[in-house]
Length: 333
Image 1 (cartoon, rainbow, N blue to C red):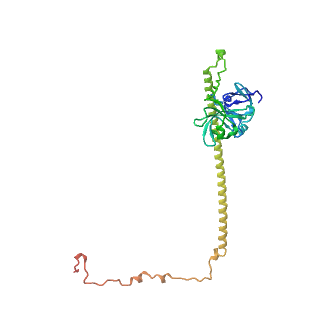
Image 2: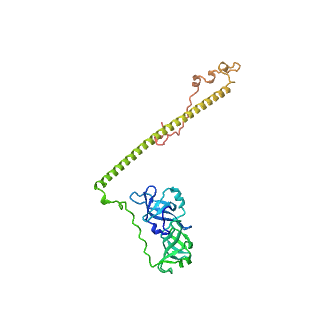
Image 3: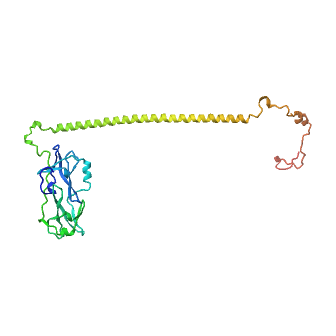
């Protein structure tokens, strides 16, 4: 640190002080967190709450970036990268109000504050208030960091003997320090000295904000329209390319089928030619050495007058012949 620092200070004295950028004189916001390494009991960084109407993102800084600590604020040298800060503070925690438990399993009190050295960041004392039934009189007690066994976000574990023998710093119920009210952006403006013609008109600011919003909306709409047209053109090109590839593959397949069919047809023609090579053809189909048979049609089918000479067959007369028309009685001529 470059500027003068107090010999020791409380965490409560550091909270709500305004953090200011050394390079730009812009404020980061009030200090809302103090990051502590629970194993080394050392202050490693601070966290600033941006807040405000714009809801800016909070910032964290290493304790080595603190240039000086004054009565109203803290000067910060904001040169380190955010990634390096996060990596350095990954094993730390924002130590605030936590419960204090003994290693015997008794809840002894509550951590209220701690005193540390601003130069080195080393914590000198943990200050806690005992609970009723803990055996300690009401007041503010100091706990040596050596007696702390472990620390979490909600509890601190310490040796039972150190808690029972903790020295009393302040008797009675101490009043917690009043938190500094957040600074208003109009706190330091000399409103009584500002001419009325220079006071900004809120209606103009509102109209400008509405105009800016409409312009941004139109830009987003135009960008979406361009993107939609671009995607449509890309889809059309892709579809045409796929159709061309499909036609090309189909043409190649049909060509292969035609070639295969032509090849099979040639093989079939050659096989038929080879099979009929020894057979006679044309005038060689007739062989004179083969005997022929002459058949007379009259020998197979006799003439019709020969069949007419045969007598006509007539059935013999039966006396008991009955006629169905005489109710079953014998017919009598």
